[in-house]
Amino acid sequence: MSRPHPMPSSLTLRNAIALPLAAALLAACVAEVRVPPPPPPPAVEVAPAPAPAVEVQATQPPPALPEYTQPPCPEVGFLWTPGYWAFSSAGYYWIPGTWVAPPAVGVLWTPGYWGFVGGVYAWHGGYWGPHIGFYGGVNYGFGYGGVGYAGGRWVGNSFSYNTAVTNVNTTVIHNTYVNNVTVNNITVNRVSYNGGAGGVTAQPTAAERTAMAEPHTAATPLQTQHVQEALRNPQLSAGANGGHPAIAATARPAVFTGGVVGAKGAPPLKPVVPPLNAHAPTPVGGHEPISAGGMREPSNPAAGHETFNTVRPTEPVRPQPNQPPPRAQTEAIKAPPKAPPPPKAPKPSKPPQEKKQSEKREGEKP
Image 1 (spheres, rainbow, N blue to C red):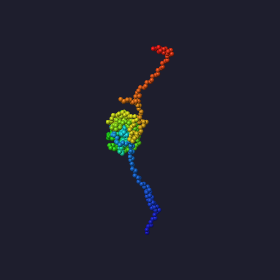
Image 2: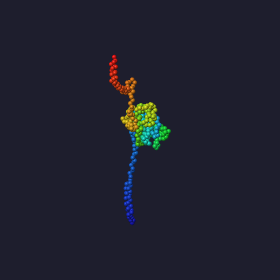
Image 3: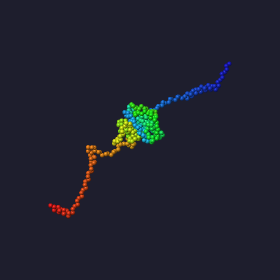
Image 4: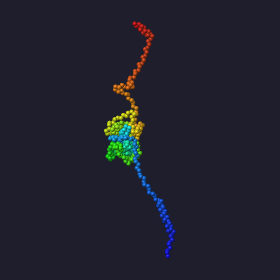
């Protein structure tokens, strides 16, 4: 006799139903909480350095940089701005190096440079900024060896000079130091442009690209006046000095007498007497002369520009040998006509008695 099967209890039935249902619900929950993988990070693109502004173009390369000594720093806080070749309608002319007061504390001067681009030589103007940018790799000397500036540095609100490369009177200026490492690693040459045949082949470094994108300040008014004074001096034309200017550097901007330094092999300095209504040569394109930072500014006497339109007193014309003097001058040197003599007073009339006696005597004469 077979044993009867036990009847399933209600708990067993509930478990038999609940377990599949729970498994189905759990599977649904797991499907809902699945998160897709994050997308890959976007590629980081390094923005190229901003292209320097091109202000003047020439078809011929500038001459080699002249060899000259640096005048001593005239005042504490002045910074050196190296000389360079500029271009105008009269050809290349030299802008002397000079010491300049910076427009603000903490800024440095990045020199301009010539670069060969698209078959022409283009001038990229200089500027003031917190760091030194790219200046074509040109070795301007005196701390500007092609990359950065080794002539000094800002220490707080004071500028300290590296006497290994700058001419400073340490008895007057005490913020100095000596660093010969950067000087010994510089190759000395006289090439004055970047690119092209025989030009410097340097490219901007990462630090220079960053400095080029920083806020900049243009050349100061004194720097602009310095350029204008150079334009007025015919001795600074490359055609006249053969690449050896008689004024290669000055102690102060726009002061071309006293404290000037001539280039090696330069002709003797001659005094410059500008003619009446003298004007500076005009840069290419018919614009006004460019400033030290490459910006064109019109001549403005109110802004400190010296003009030579003053009317001078005329001098009397002197006759040349064996030539009669001009008619106007002959009449001017004649003596003035004499005044007519005063009229004579009439003789007093004789009394009637004397008149009769006089007639009687005349009648008695044979």
